[in-house]
Length: 257
Image 1 (cartoon, rainbow, N blue to C red):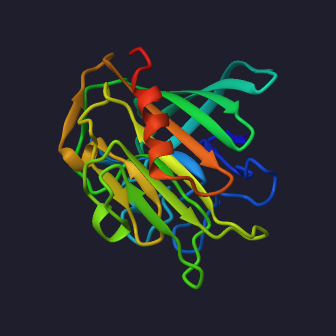
Image 2 (cartoon, rainbow, N blue to C red):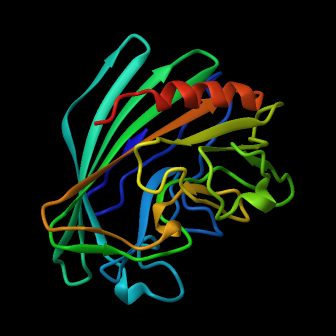
């Protein structure tokens, strides 16, 4: 479900497993209160943070704010749905820094969902995105220390190896309450994106994010836009990496926007 409360970060949660049993995302876990299912977070945007929402123990005075609204009317037809949301990012003083647009398309394939995102950032002023260990589209699944989980990337690296490494995709799987089998979610980076194959954040609780900011500082001029394409595939049960690679190949052939 798309959430877009006034003056709050937009996010998608809950995402129910394709077979209808269990929820594969988590909102505001105790270990990261500012993480919300599937969402976008950025760090060091002209020195302003759009990650921790003022909830972290340090840095709250430099955190900016989010101001979203739905664009047009969401559409649904058979197994497809589409919607778009625009968000103004403001500094702690209330000055606009960025305009963000998220254009989502959901396709229900029965045993899996395909969520395609066209993500566009437009500078309201000249913007510098500082080098940072994480930032971008982020997935938070309901990780529990006692039940664990695993991750693998397109190079075959596991969770202990994948953080900060470049990859075309990263897939995470873990036990989900109410399910006998683990659920799996694959996130994908498109060849047209900045710094592709992008470095990834894979944290200790299996939160994952393709992040151009890991690769280094980048910029937008006032009025300049940059668009990223991402795909998120939610599987009812884990699949072989070759299946994920096939989906990425199909996604990679999608025309640039």
